Length: 131
Picture (cartoon, rainbow, N blue to C red):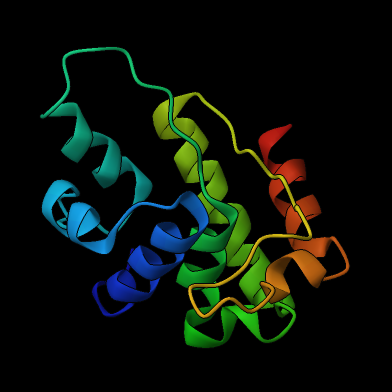
């Protein structure tokens, strides 16, 4: 996650997963930017097998910035998302929940534009995962 987007991502995660912000701030080592770096960071602190997901909202935020919940992704941003998902899958050999639940909300309780989009972002990620 880009350093300037960490607070927004934490807010999204706090709201969607019902994790208090103080717990996220204390428990998550925010010293990574890419998924492979994240895997390395958590790998230093865990002694068990861990399966992780590549979060759709996190990928959109990384590729599109602050307005990721407000508009559709451009073709260039979709390509960034494909690259990020491919890189993530290569580093973890896991998948993405891909959900697309219409009930997902931002930290401001607004419906996430990512799930209202015409499935192109989800399909872009899914097509990358199946390669």
